[in-house]
Length: 446
Image 1 (cartoon, helix red, strand yellow):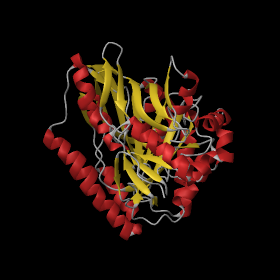
Image 2 (cartoon, rainbow, N blue to C red):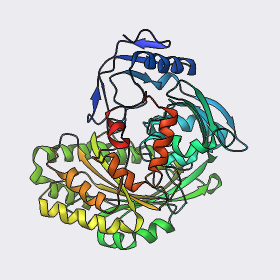
Image 3 (cartoon, helix red, strand yellow):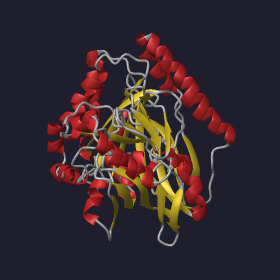
């Protein structure tokens, strides 16, 4: 028996993630409202031999949030703790969702320097799994690279402050720690003054973009493209940063609704739904979608440009490869799809990020290209992810920690120069493996 833990304790319902690719049955679910409740949960877990797993939005595609022990639902530990507009540093409770940040940071005159295209995650869930956007030209990495401090409850129940003045040697590990090193209750981010993004979206040919990908990624603040398999064209998106004084030219409410809701969600959902039922129709559908791609330009606050509403449920695998390998990888993926006869309705998304020094960052020590393959959640896989992963891994690829992959600790240790240092820190902070689960045992070893 675990016994009662302070905080809101509920009869545990079965947990499953957003993509419906992982599930588990916790023994108990606790919604802590203070750091003391988190400490008590860790202590109780140690006494009873259970494990603890904090959970945010459950938006990871892996079982990184699964547990049969104590599930900590972090939603009640959210919101602003402190802010210093002069330095741009903001401290947030760990359960704060990314979509809440504009309302928190905006009145302070601040913004995150970079974001991905989904904002449903919690700030800790996003940073612990290495969530990133695209931003090589602006010298930007994943969201975790902006962490300058945090508060951590370790596997021994101790509370550590980690920043430049306290336990600084731990920050490169804990900022992107897979949830393996403890429960992060507060995180301090280095923000930037609010800014605008000019977005230019345009069709282009796949071959032309592959030839120029490295140069365009370095030249633009933010560059990415989407390629629908079975076509020869792509849709590019180039974002340029401007101060607020530049003046916004946002999409109109009707235009945004037509493009994002009707086209990107309703119509696209219908297309991939048809493809799931009649796979042979997928190439024709993709070619039709390609013909509808047109150029558009708008200027808006950064978060409105970075983030896209995605309502069509999907599964995703993403790898980081050396920047110069991106073109070869895409060509090999195209050849594999044709050779194997796969019918792929979802686009392949390609982005880039600057090198950083976080121990388990997928961009550790190298400028990186990110290649994401997707499948509609009702599609039968039929080996597409397996064959794509073989290509991605063969190019010294590192899998996104929050997305589907099959790598194990022995393989990952060869891809990360600081892998053994990270495991040493894990031994120090969680010697009894209070925060482990099957996913962490696979990717980190025990």
